[in-house]
Image (cartoon, rainbow, N blue to C red; front, side, top):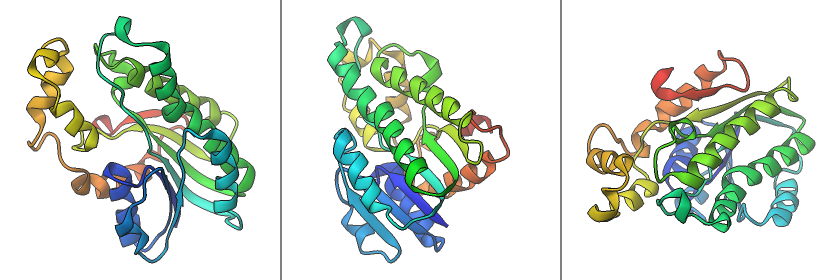
Length: 237
């Protein structure tokens, strides 16, 4: 297979890239920061690109995929988590910065891919349960993932030869969880979801990305049984 993955410098993106390479697939990775280990692997091609730089993103992705006529799977994984605080304390600039990476960069990527690559079989956007939970403190992140879900649903109605899904991967121990684990007790007391995630850190309820990459890859295959445009949670599939 030919697989394109964004956000491959660490976490879920890096582990999924390793998983597909181990399966013998060709992986095209895009991220702001490089992953030297992956760059040593055969069948791995890398574009270092900040997704928030829209004009450069469009241009360099075109060049990166020149001559590629088929992508079996596109995984839109890159995303950012802003500070966790109340909505009234969250500025529009903060929300715009998150939306830029978590949503609008993905629109640009999809537009470029559908224009430049002849056949795309499946697109998976990594979403989150935060897209529908409305947990206090999640703010821009929740807004961005809910919008991402709708973006995928809307594209699914236009791209009838491609199956598109927004998939919440469950709770996985990544750099995001490291950030959450470092939030002070005083701050965590305001946000019940933070307390819950901190209590899960280091337990079987929050496995590392390396342990779930194979499961996620299998889940993406299973997703093809569902209607294109669906939001799916791996814990409910």
